[in-house]
Length: 209
Ligand code: BTN
Image 1 (cartoon, rainbow, N blue to C red):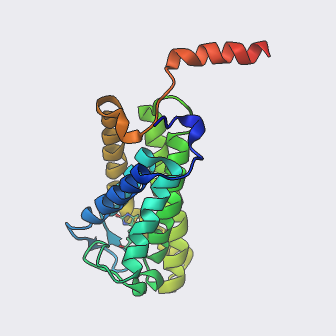
Image 2: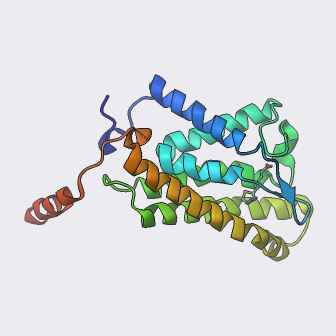
């Protein structure tokens, strides 16, 4: 079935659901190496790499949905978060904002990476994972962490700087994986991209209007 740029609003089919399930499982698997805490409240985890991949590969809707699936299963008590954590307690803890922010993060990443009908470029992918996977997620995570731990917002933001080097490494890894997949296995994205040459023709047509 054709899944091009313009038909992204169509209903989900079985393949979409399978891809969402595989991506949710991938994020869960990235939690298996465990996590470690530097300042005690919020863990450093490889799962945010999975969130970056989800948005960049599946796009905004399916990427966000894969995170919703992961978090919904976690809420039922399955130990799917790094360190084998699960249950409703996760959603009232200091890392709750980051975890819930993953939904918005995957959505924004997908919007940026798939903003045009052309193949994702290195720079658009890097921009997407940094803006969505870091800025958007921290925008959810830091205020909630501050609220739960009662540490002032500014100090909480300072402690969150500890995540930045690791998250930048994850952003580079996610970009390399995505750009590699675009070249080696474009079907992973389930969409057909317009050739870049077409852009100039489109621009000329548009200018003629
Ligand atoms: C959880 O397991 O409860 C959610 C963990 C959220 C961790 C956040 S995601 C962004 C930042 N980077 C990390 O490695 N850790 C934090």
